Image (cartoon, rainbow, N blue to C red):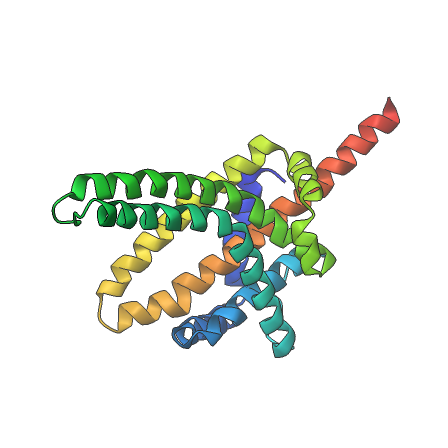
Length: 239
């Protein structure tokens, strides 16, 4: 599938069952007490699994224990992939504070140097985070394929999957997802300004719809790696 087809399919996907969109939205409300996050991530992985399996319907909300555990797995994978960028940002903040302490100055007397150091390490950290997340998405999809967390850290296999998708195609998809995510965040932010009703709409519709859209599109872009592999194999067999 091409990028346009993937986006079009993923946009329509959540609207096939608004009841399930609302159910996922309830978990966004529950995310204020943390536990909802794990079920959101678990359902996110469930959609990727069903998409890879070739199922076009939204998965059911059942097997709650498995969904919770899947959510924990997704969180662990993203935490590990973002560990290095997080450490770099943390080191930058620590180094800034330490440099002020050793020179007996404060953020108020030397704000330029303080924010310059944090800014440089922050930019480096953000760039690295974007790169690591690029791989983390395919890592999660690979985990969904094999249904084991170890598959998320088979780095050579993950590189091969991206190669089969096509680096250019995958990076374009990633950029499009970032842009759509930014727009969705902007819309949700505007809605959050509206007391109660706006917040409820954002939590029950906007956020869950985007999660379903994104997980579906990730599953489809991942499946396109199999299509690329078949095309390569067929070409080699002809030769």
